[in-house]
Length: 274
Image (cartoon, rainbow, N blue to C red):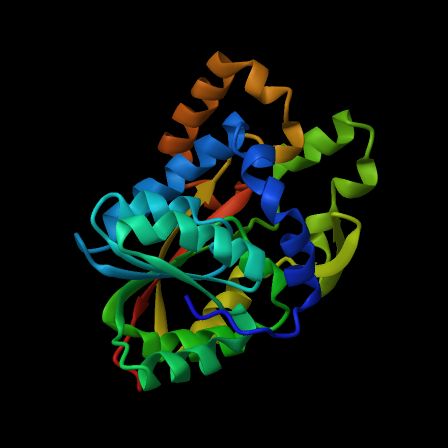
């Protein structure tokens, strides 16, 4: 895997720092697993069997590996070299690979991909909100467009902007100021591994606007409408029966109540626009 040195953006530095402990830190949380199951079901529904799939902000490659084990050809990308290296080690035995590529630089990645003889993908996805670390999504849309075949699906999972589950959790934890943070317009401060970066809670109308004309909206699902956010851990993991009930409710109401999810899965279809 070719991994050239590059100047990391603040979010990339933060996730680079926690990469060695990322899977052990989040992997045992049942709420995260429940939300992953919801997204993975949507991926299987959207992508053609054994298709070639591009992942944006893939982290340590958990979702990419899951797809590769089911016969998909996977190229996972991430802004963090440490995350990409971990993902590549998991994917290589399954015929996949991971590369360093920040979502903001997807246009340059597309140029390198095709210059190296690469072909367009049958689908793309981004799970658990790495695109919320990108302030301007327009370059992402421009870069993603040539990488996908006409008619291909792009499934983008971003933070919801009105999450009652997080509001309740933060109030109960004695952090009422955090309960309304998703209403913030523009860049909001975030911190991980004592490293500061910014996140943006992108609105649906803004996302649809920047994805046009190359992508048409094709529906959305709430991910974690009743299943609580990770802020409820480890409390919710100790109550598996309650969590199973919440997950069942999500399967029924993920469509009608999509806007209330901890995350929202936006599905787009690649148009014929050049």
